[in-house]
Length: 207
Image 1: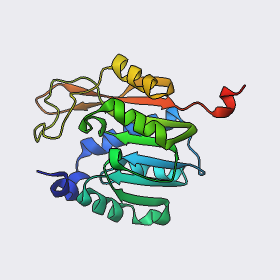
Image 2: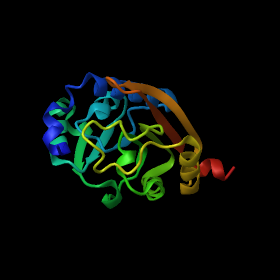
Image 3: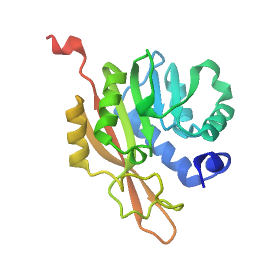
């Protein structure tokens, strides 16, 4: 079943709601958000993470490849008006004249084939002094997805290699922390990490 087909019932999952709450809380703990900020949510889906961060920032751009998910996001977040902009695009093809104070994502990283290329792309979209906060699966055995592994390129991410990829992409202040655990019936627990990192502010570099 495609993401378009699953969009209408996506938010009914208490497990997804709990995950989004934990990730949002971890992002707020790691980075100071304020009403001047413009954030990009990569793989925003129906807006589970977007909704939880929007009250703390000025505006968010919600990016997703699924039209069904974005239609549901627009319906879910109508109350926020111009504070939210939904964009139908793959992150690797995304073009904009904007740069962002921060880029967030939850459970999207494992759907993107080339992690190194993705991190380089994100680096180019973040303003000096800005951040990334990416939540995804720690290494797992391929059993996480109930609907099979079509479109899944990675069975989780190991801390050391992901930090090295972020460093190669130009990020600093890199952290990797388990922020949530998903328990599925009859299966083991799955750990969810938050990768946090910043781009150095040019003013700091010049000192």
